[in-house]
Amino acid sequence: MSNLQQRTAKFQKIDWAALEKNREKFKINLRKSKRIAEILNKRQKLIPRSESYYDFLTPYIKSLIPDLIPTDTSQYQIPCILQRLDYLLVAPDNCLAQEILNSLRALIMFSNSHIQAITDAGIIPNLIKFLSFTYPEGIVEQVSWLFSNILSEDLSQVVVDSAFVLALMNAVDTNHPKVAENSLWALANIAADTEEMRKLLITHKFLEFLVEKSTSDSMTLLRIVAWIFSNMTKEPENFTKKEFSMCIAICKNLTKYIEEDISSETLWGLVNLSSQESLEYIQQIVDNNLADYAIKLSTKDIISIKTPALKIIGNLCATSHEHTQFVLNYGILDTFCYESCIFSTFSKDLFAVLNNISAGTPIQVSKLLNHKIFDFIVLGIAHYDSQAKLQATQTIKNMLRVLRNETIQRLIEKEFLQGISLVLKDSHADFCNSILDICLDVFKEKRLWSLIEASGCLNEIEKLFNCNNTSICKKAQEILNLFTLTPISP
Image 1 (cartoon, one colour):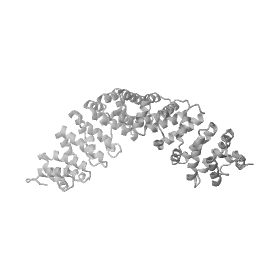
Image 2 (cartoon, rainbow, N blue to C red; image 1 turned 180 degrees about the vertical axis):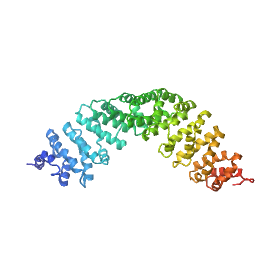
Image 3 (cartoon, rainbow, N blue to C red; image 1 turned 90 degrees about the vertical axis):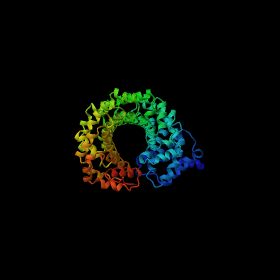
Image 4 (tube, rainbow, N blue to C red; image 1 turned 60 degrees about the vertical axis):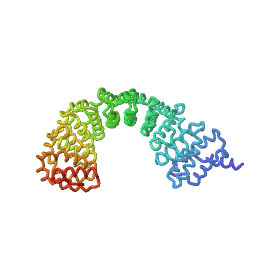
């Protein structure tokens, strides 16, 4: 008997069934694992490619990867074995393919770090063919799961082309729930990647595809569709009128569901759509009752829903006075508990809404003089979030421009002058500039000079005169010159 025949006979005598049954007790030792890996490497010399060859390999592969993963040397042996499994994937044997796919899944489930090893082995191109239902459902399900996980880690390792996108879209249309879910997650990861990837999807009528899927009976699929929608709308300025209308249709379908995840992602998609400067597109959002949807949800005490809803309202108010009035007609300003909002994570979004309203008409701005709302705005100047600070100061600047006397009176009532000394210690240059703009405007009122001098805020402004910011120095100089007979020179 030749050496080749002896080696073949030796491995054929292994009781693979018993090995699988008692895997924990009889784990393949490293020496044997290394030897089998060598056999896989020398497959063309040792074992002919025949049915018996595949029958011989299938049960071995079933236990090889799960037994090898926990070992200390797996990082050296797994890449070598993966290269050989890649070759075996082209074999016309579904049982062997199923076990190889199971092994790949076991690798990823043990650690996402193995995804890199799988992609480096060049296995991905051979996996794509299994997305076809000419193969058993079990194989298609495993492949769809593999792609949903691989694409979530590193899209750059996969050639995302037309054939691949269409294969995934076809797989979503199957009656097999797990295959549909996994394939849709894979598409979701593509949509979340880059603008280039989203454009590729759109060229394959992906938005029409989402319109159809947004009416699914499966809540699982609807959650994924909502997440895809929030990603596909990231560049609304690139949409044609038809594409924008399809996004509106997807959004309308998703608003029928009250599940938190779906509502949140739908609102984030609507945030992107409402960021458009086109009045025509904004009006389309209003006409389809999507603005109403956002306004109603803004009253909910769920951060994941309230935050995007407020951003949408802010976008609407920034568009035109008519849309600002549309928001105000809902009585939205009276629905917030401003005392508790000041320290919430969404407070900066509420400040943005108030800031955009303050750029409206005198009647609209007068709504902000309400004591609770104005208290909230003044407190915002001392807010911990720099963006909230800037929004609050900008709101007061806008109000001074539209309703000067009324705003100044409110500032005096809220002891704004006494608080300036504290807020000016903020190191944020933009914020200091904004506060000094307010001071420069208010301090021109001579009737307030005695209050201003008594407040001690001039001492803090004087300290800014020697700071490194030219704009701040200049404004501090202008303010101090108001109160001195001899102008101060820089």
